[in-house]
Image (cartoon, rainbow, N blue to C red):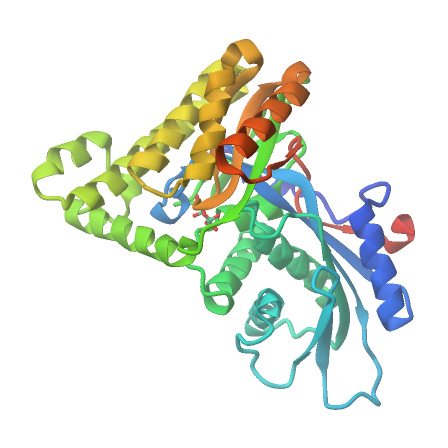
Length: 414
Ligand code: GLA
């Protein structure tokens, strides 16, 4: 399979057509709070990962798709010189109904409130690169479910970066923009994530999913639009507390596996190498490695099948991916397993082609490929079985592939 860089295909910032409710909410909150209209409206999507989980920080392959749920950042220059103390970014979150003042005359550091750390980290990234933001008034609104494994934080980081590009008159290389946002996540939110979420949010494309080679940061569009097949996202509405520490532990275990195999990253290991090293490995480390090397192979296969519209084969790989994440990587949880089990019980006859957990795990969402004419019935059955078997309530939505980060012209949005 050949890889084509998408860097040249990134569309210039432009109007995205009619305003969405989130854009309208951001604009209304901005006017309400600051008594003026925003100069810039930046939008960045969340993502769902079709396959390729916990492979990005191992230099492997991922196949995410940006979703039609956006974080919106509205902003305008604040030239109020009567303000209390020096240049600053005043940020208001519509979700939390709280505001924070970030001073620009001292190096920003992580702090309270923690939701503002994504903004602090991205502002700091611009400053470090010599692009000093002016004093700004900022309002954030988001339609990406928080904590649902759909990259609400990457969407906020990338929307903030997109707004800061406009406010500083800079255009970052898309990969550099994603790296800047990842650095914010690492240093300001304390999550040692890979690059998948930020790249998907920057480079998302309505035409399909993105096959990303995370070692070389090469992105290839995998078109798959087919009106007969839909991507159904089901949110368990569960986030188990161990999620954060477990993510760092998995990363460390993968690094240890690579060290024991004598390769720079697990990208360079094969299933045979992991198999042959059976005697050397700690069994846990071996299972982690087995997941990563088999997941890389599944992801490349899935991209080929997706492009060929062989959705049944993609679906089979999704079920396999889930089993590997559950048994070898141990990042699933009972609620996710119930949803994937029920999807399997509904099966092809009922319109489900495949399902798996998506994102970091320990809660969050599943992603299913479903025949479009059966989506409503499938979602209903998943919701009722989920309630019956776990006592919890499911939320769900369908999303096609969506456009990556862009500016919306405020006049178009009014
Ligand atoms: C989180 C991280 C990503 C990736 C996934 C697991 O979403 O932010 O970088 O590692 O988990 O695939």
